[in-house]
Length: 432
Image (cartoon, rainbow, N blue to C red; front, side):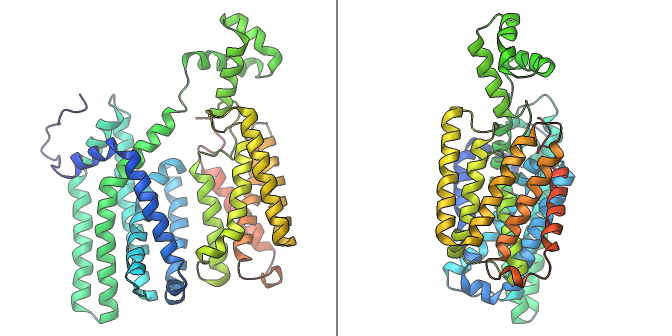
């Protein structure tokens, strides 16, 4: 049924079929787009680009972070918001990557194009995702819902991008040279955004569906969940539950571990497959660096600080019950402890201050894991907020020292902002 074309006078012969075709090859599209995105990020972190377009970089990443928060509120889920934002960020990073490859410098004014493209693409993508969510509520497959939503809005999507592209090409033709270059960059970015909307956004939606389907409960897990919610998930209750269900105790234990990994027995923020964790890790570090020097740190220097913060976060995620199901719990914990140990050794060999920050991050992460599934979940949220406030400080220290900070209360403000993000995120501590 899903392969049959749907007759409707508003259905596109171009956007709808291509977007549906993109869902068939969503894994390949996501891998390729991730490679292009990394290339774009490395391009804007190039010293020449930072020197020429420091204020534009600041504007771009500030709008990126603000749009992510706004979309999270509008869609009530960062996972859904990331499907909107990821193709937009990809489109915005393609043109500076091309300019970097061609050895062209981008002035601050020309660099503003990224923010225009990002805002436009995010708005268009939001409309498509909202339409997709409405279509998904109907008795239809994900593939059909993608085709329906993209087909019904095809004229709007094409119209917005074509109108803006020709507008900025007209600016390029009838204004001064420096403004004209801005128009050319914006027009090129909008063309890239249109392709990302048609190809990458459907692939992102299918990745979202794939992730959500992996959290679906089996019949046995659903029955075990009913008993564990009433009597608890302690091992002493497993034989009783097994007797009631008429299954082996080992099957109950396996079901309980699976329920923990899926987040149904106490959700934890540090889930390795949650994009919000990695967005906050990267975003808060970059914001700290931007507010310190109004420029993005170089790609090489990032590895020293952000790399260690990334490793300790991976280690904490592996210690969390809400981790990869395909890996045995004992192996996950061993890998988590090993990665944390290596990270601490590297931090000690680097500097005392970095060691103190990494050790504090580890303590805050453990506090978050301990209180995440308890009645005092707010303590876990506060710990997470301070965790990312320290990442913000780490980005600031990329260029300055603690004595250069205006006041230490900037970290407190960061903690409050990130706490608000936790509260707004529907899927951070609420079971799916």
